[in-house]
Image (cartoon, rainbow, N blue to C red; front, side):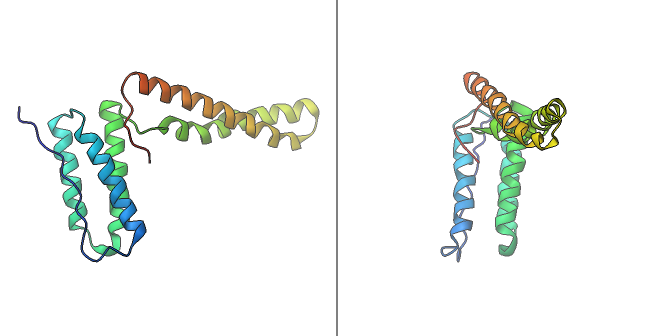
Length: 153
């Protein structure tokens, strides 16, 4: 079994003045360098290298969007296959879920108890806090199991 190397995304000529495009490039290269430090299966490395090649073939007008899509696809595959997630992944995922699944029902319950539906807004911060707490607990667990990348989106 040969060990494949993950390719680096190279800068194109003419993007020196575009700070946002350089930032997107640097963020993807940071992810790729973090992945180089880990032992990944060869089929994942082949997929990542194919995605990097697709970036180099993308037209310059769509380059930033393509880089972001490739990064999202790589992170999604890593989470699905190896349970590897970036820092604060679960916190950022559970924060809006806490608002929806905990905050609104708590607010409706408070509104029904006090007879004032304006209390729905009071439940939202509670849901936000519960979502953040659940997400942080899951992030801590992922870090303890070495399933967390030293990378943040």
